[in-house]
Amino acid sequence: MEKASDYLDGDLPDSLANRIRFHLGLCDDCDGWLSGLWSTINLLRGLPRVETPRSLLQRIRSLPDG
Image (cartoon, rainbow, N blue to C red; front, top):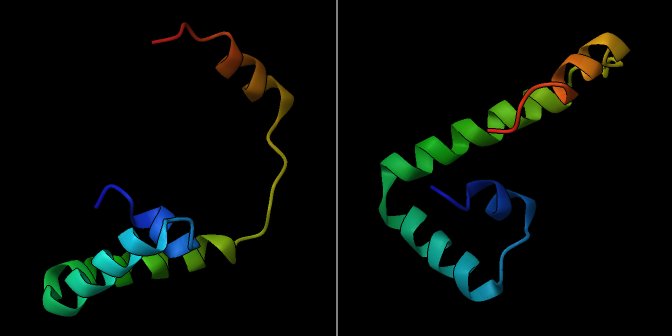
């Protein structure tokens, strides 16, 4: 589901959010998948924040675009 994160964050236009809600009411597979995504997001939000080591940021920035 391409717009799943936007849907969960409430960042979609009402018309699209309503279409997704309608689909979720009919499709157990998508409803289960979205519930799993929501649980994963909530678990990740519960983790403590850590500062990214400066050396790692420098290595990432030095990688070629691509």
